[in-house]
Image (cartoon, rainbow, N blue to C red; front, top):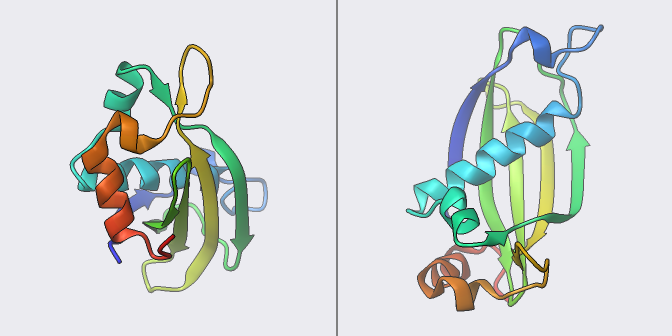
Length: 141
C-alpha cells in the first residue's frame, strides 16, 4: 500500500479558544494530504480541473483522538482506501510528531464533468491514473 506523508505546521489561526486545533482544520489538512498523494504519484488535481473535471466529496467521516495545539507539527498520512468505477475512497491518519494519532478519517469522491456535474470514470479521463489507483488501493474491488 502506497502512503503519502505531508508535514503541516499548526498555525495560531487554526486553533480555537481552548488552544487546540479547531475541528474543521483537519478537513483542510486532509485536502492537503490528498493533493500531495496525487502529486507523489505523478499527477495533478489542478491538471484534472483544467481539463474540465472536478472530484467533489460525497461522504466524509473523521474520528478525533488526541488534539493538536499551536506550535506543533501534524503529519498527514494519506492513501487510496478503495477505487472503483466511479468512486474513490481515501484514508487518512493525522499524527503528532511522536506518532500519537490525532485523528483518523475517510473521504469518498466521485469524478464529474465540470459543466454538467455528471459522473465520469477516471479510466475514461486518464487510464494510467486509474490503473495506478487500482494498483495501490488498500481494498481491492
